[in-house]
Length: 113
Length: 112
Image (tube, rainbow over all chains, first blue to last red; front, side, top):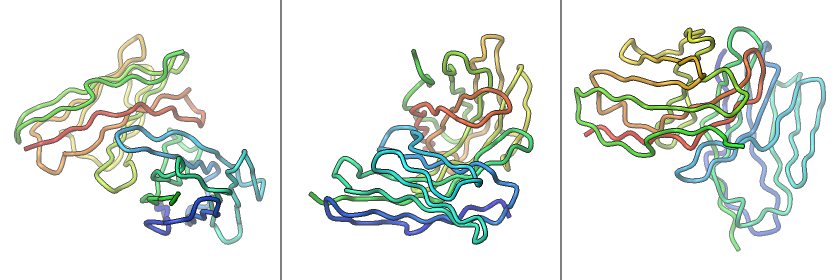
């Protein structure tokens, strides 16, 4: 119940295209869902996050879509750029205890110029 | 405003040795969490410290221990190193009972 399943494992997109990464969870106590971007040799950096009371959140080229009934959420990167090439992690957290994050296994995105 | 600072950036140790990793949290943050990220995997929660006490521990053996100092900085200690301990160790700081981690760049530990 503590797992967050992420797909695909890797993704190749043409410059200007849309990148879509999906995550699914089981624990209905989760109420915070961030997406992190990680470049090689660096720590994860927060991209965008959503709470389950909204179905979509947009920040620039990045959009989270959230489906509470299906217990799924996804990251859409519009107009993908070569500089977006990185590994993306979804995560989930609940307010019980320490607000620790449960991370997905990551998606390696490559945007071709 | 400095973010989360971790040291050292890279470390090579031999099996059976002990290692100490250090973390200075982002200014204003009082809580430090440690994560282990194996190659090609997502970060896994090790434990969290607040007010110099361990609040919660993930599924890691007692070889992993930590400490938080009065200035909120923290150390992660690993004893009796195994080859499988080779990973990127990430420190994240936050405010207690709040979302919003800030991660450091990590310490790459290689056990040979």
